[in-house]
Length: 577
Image (cartoon, rainbow, N blue to C red; front, side):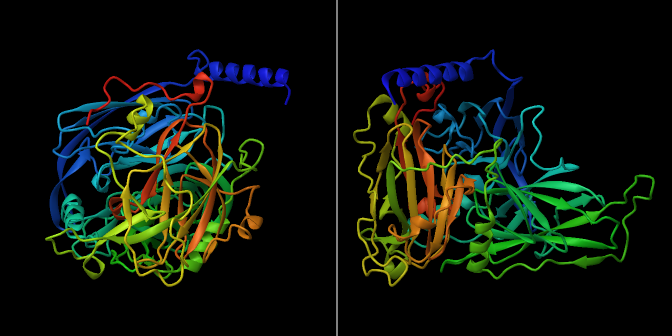
């Protein structure tokens, strides 16, 4: 490219930045205001009542509804004793990393009696996402849907559904989850598991002493859009509706090539939109919808099933509305708990639309390549303490053998102020520091190194990361979530990643675009993204127990040259540590 072309391109980009930043060019976008009061409420499930943190007294929390291009302002006021932050999971947060939410990454926690205003704009996104707390295990009860509608006049790439319904999966604990993780971190043992899974906050009829069941009431001959969200703390889930086929049309707020399936696999942190076509005539039956875990690791897990009911309504209101009796109840068949073959097959079906309106802008060349091992390990037991982890040690988790240690101040502020010394170092390893047969016999030494290490990326660099599961403490699927970005899943496989052979089979045409991907148990997954969002961005396992043990790392993306390529200054009410 000659000098004149370079100047012309810079002028074009500057004009585009100015256009996008101009409040007058709003495409009829609006500002939507919400207030989140974090307050304690008594909630009863499974005949157990406990006081727990809620947003505005609701469990699950309230729905955020907006359109692509809208500005969202949420004032969060903390009335509880716990520290709080809120993460807007999947929102890109272009230039507004201060609103991303992970504690000690982009902000200090909102303490008791304090408030913070999250202020961000939705840019080029539409679909189903969700918000949740991002401090310790507070998201067990603090979560809710984000519904982003297309800009006015822009249709879905499928027929408009008759009705849209959020389906949120969660976990119910009879005791305070904060006490559970505190005990686990103190003793080094695995934490106690949940007592039930929930659909829209309700466990369903398959649990003893459960009086709460979600009922989806539908009409014959209609198409419903189910906006599915896995907000569970620690479990991937299989989901199915008896005698009904679901059509997947979106994953992580990205439209997909439609495909039919009887069963959906959804990891914590993922969202999946499906079309449900109801039966043409009123059936003399009720249909169970059920979800239970996909569990691949060696640790204990909640081996129960949550269920709701799909009930058909008469096609006209003129008919009596009294419930029919003696209806047959059909139940779905779900895969076995560790059906890795189903998981791999389901993942392979997800493809981006990759058309003119919704292109898949996959980086075709790579500036920076990384190979990350992700998995469990151990830490030595502190002196004068008895630990309950493997062989008297403490459970730990890591990326490239670095167990992420949260700082006492925020990484983003340290980066923005140029004061990283004593907060983080930039020597995160690009490759595993201790190579071994990652999916074979584990090494004798399973200790990990604690540290707050980051990778620095220049603005607009194209990045490829191959993430490798390991057999240390057992092979296990890990749903990895990247804040601030979507990425393309260009390849996956079983066994150890081969950097020489495997890239030849990468899909660079229509790979699925996501923000959370499952690293296969005993296998690997490769992703690509362009570092076009300045700031500090957490990448971590969305099984909260693994994040608590240190399975995470951070990317620091530097500013670009143009105004719209720079991180904005912090808001005046940013909480202090």
